[in-house]
Image 1 (cartoon, rainbow over the protein chains, first blue to last red):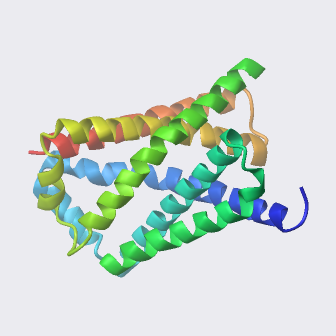
Image 2 (cartoon, rainbow over the protein chains, first blue to last red; image 1 turned 90 degrees about the vertical axis):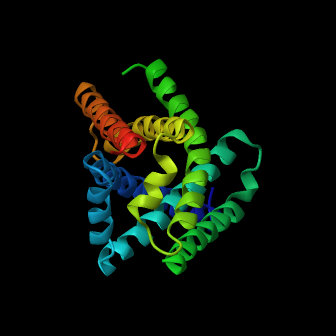
Length: 111
Length: 114
């Protein structure tokens, strides 16, 4: 495969891989944070209050966007591997990018 | 590592991806709904505490993510770092267990929070 389709496929691959690494690094922190609820509601509330700092909110926005991007990229891979739609790569990648941005923006605007 | 084992891991990655796709849709919708007006512990725990449905959902989500993350990192280690073989498999297994244990602990925390 050559030309713009190859280019889009390479970017889709890179975004999927890097977002996957970021999610794998984020998950233990997410689980440890939620685990504070074992000490009671107040402990979780203390963590949530700490998380209201602008830099933490920005990081949350980033990780939610990366989650949406990884979901979209994963659906693209499943479609390419299991559905006979090879020519649709570029459209699927564009839908994926759009969906990721949309989810990130909705989250950012809601805070 | 045999070709058969690699094929099994490839299928496991697709199976967990399909499960995670459903879970992530629900999770994103919950996040967008929950953050409106700010997050509070009372609101989160009010939803999850003593809920069998959320416990099953999050436990499934955690186990699928633990397997998917470990297999994904194993692939990246092989392709980008050239790390293969028993040592790489051992590290991937440790990652899967660590994610599963911390994740299930978090599920227990939000379901039985005092």
